[in-house]
Length: 93
Image (cartoon, rainbow, N blue to C red; front, side, top):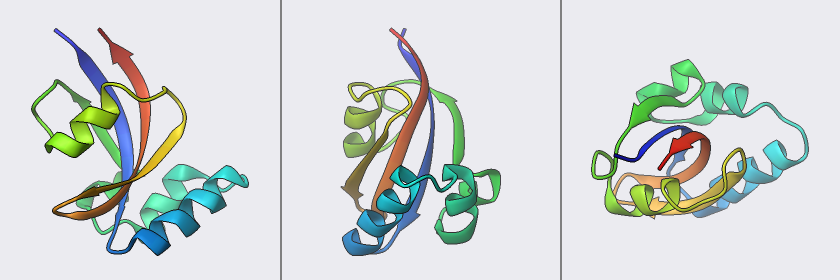
């Protein structure tokens, strides 16, 4: 069964999501940005969501986590919770 480990940053607007993505691409630390800006409780852990399988996260999130590049900042991904930046840190197919 497929499993992935990922971290994310959840914000309320696509604009803020894009701005944070640029900061990370310009060298800012993903975990520090998550601690400062993420509205998800996982932000306190640098956005770490741990390991999970398909179907454990919302559909839009799942699609990106199980198909996107590993160790690359992906997003913005819009869900009912807001806008996410995702980084898949590990995946087993």
